Length: 73
Image (cartoon, rainbow, N blue to C red; front, side, top):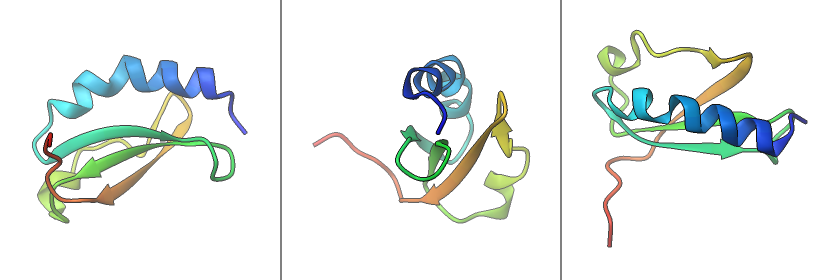
């Protein structure tokens, strides 16, 4: 498993860029599943939104998950 600290640093470096893209509503870290990965939450399962999004960041795979919009309560 990749070091949790390293995953969090990668997330921190790339979150602003990812969140600035249309359809991206959240960025998270999954360090429990296998080697660890970045999870990017999407508002919809739209091919246009996914086009141009990276498959990995700094060698860490990205898992895209459609969660719908995320709103503060």
